[in-house]
Amino acid sequence: MPWYSFISKALKLYIYSLQYNLFHALFVLYMNFLKEKKDHVL
Image 1 (cartoon, rainbow, N blue to C red):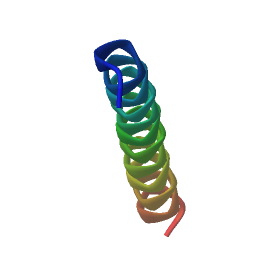
Image 2: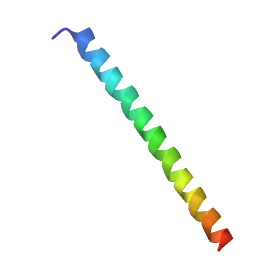
Image 3: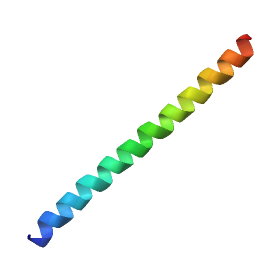
Image 4: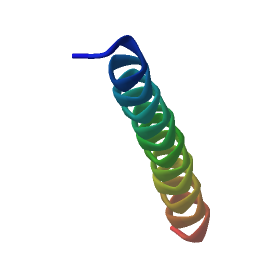
């Protein structure tokens, strides 16, 4: 396998994991926001 092919695969994996971490963080923030809102209403 050529080295540039390996690097492009590693970059794709890295970008994918960055996106996943970003979405996961946003989801956790959103869930915390909903929970606080519900606590205020109750």
